[in-house]
Image (tube, rainbow, N blue to C red):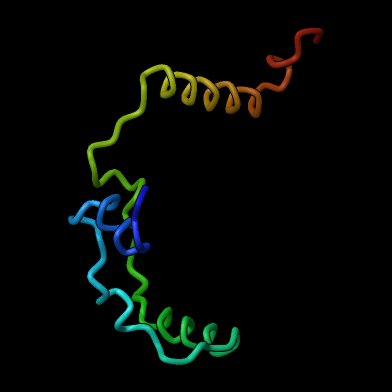
Amino acid sequence: MGLRSLDELEEKVVPKKIRGKGEELANLPDEVLSEADALSEITQIAKMNKVLKSFIGMGYVSTGAPIRQLLNTFTDLWLYSMEQRHPQSSCATC
């Protein structure tokens, strides 16, 4: 391609909007951490998380199930309750 360096290739290939300016590497530690030290640091960061109540599946958003799915669910529940009350009704040969 007639290029003199990788930097020149980067200028030609990578768009300016996504090309790094060097500050991405500025906050990296100067020394490499061992696995135990890295795990300890990650554990300390994870302890800062807050456990909050999840409202997923509680009906707080406009969610809906397809009619066929609802019908199958309620039919299965009804049949199960009938089997509990009348075991002979679920037996074809009784």
